[in-house]
Image (cartoon, rainbow, N blue to C red; front, top):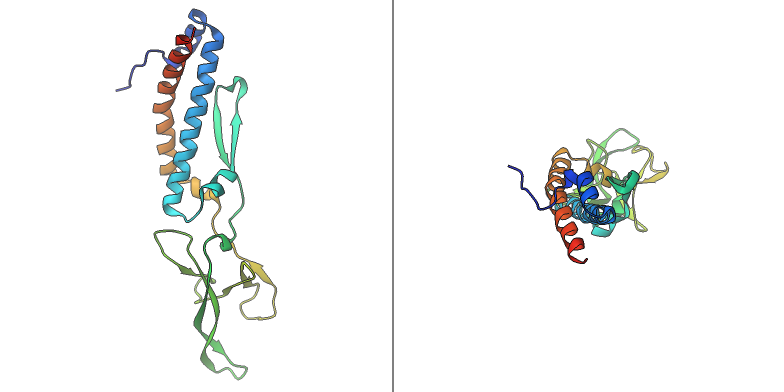
Amino acid sequence: MSIRYKYDINDRRRLEKRLKVGKVEKAMRWSLDAAQSKAAAMISREIRKTYTIKVADVKRTLQIKRARRDAHRALIYTGRRIPLERFSPKPKVVRISATSVNGRVYQTRRKGATVRVRKDKGRQLVGRAGRQSGGWYAKGHVLRRASAKDNRSEPYMQFGPSIPGMVAHPQLLNDTQEMVRKELPKQFSDRLDYLLSQE
């Protein structure tokens, strides 16, 4: 059952005729700003429950798109995959299997790296799929060679997920939309009531 408020957001056109248009439009802008801020805070809070990223990292990727007459907003998260050095990398010596020039398989040690991308999985060893290791941490970057079989091949920076990818979880999007659907009418009624009380 929906809650009825003093001023109905779906009845803005009639309110504009009965009250001052400027007041109604201002109340709408204020309510959109408030709902937008709550939605952004909710998204940031929820993805930080799972991923080891900072509030500032999320804010940097956020863009606000305003529709004509400021009647609608869209929260758009942009950005590429995040370098693994942003996920608390640590060097680690690991044991690996290697093959000699004579074809003999033997055990040896090499430098590896661990990162903590998700809070529910703990630290993970950086490497190729199906391999024990393949990455290392040096000079502030997590690197891995282009070819695991060629130690002289070019090293490349390694990346984790992107923030848009984190945000695109269906449950998170549904929960955020539901929160805005409930919050916006309340904000509109409260703010219009405040503006009219100032006359």
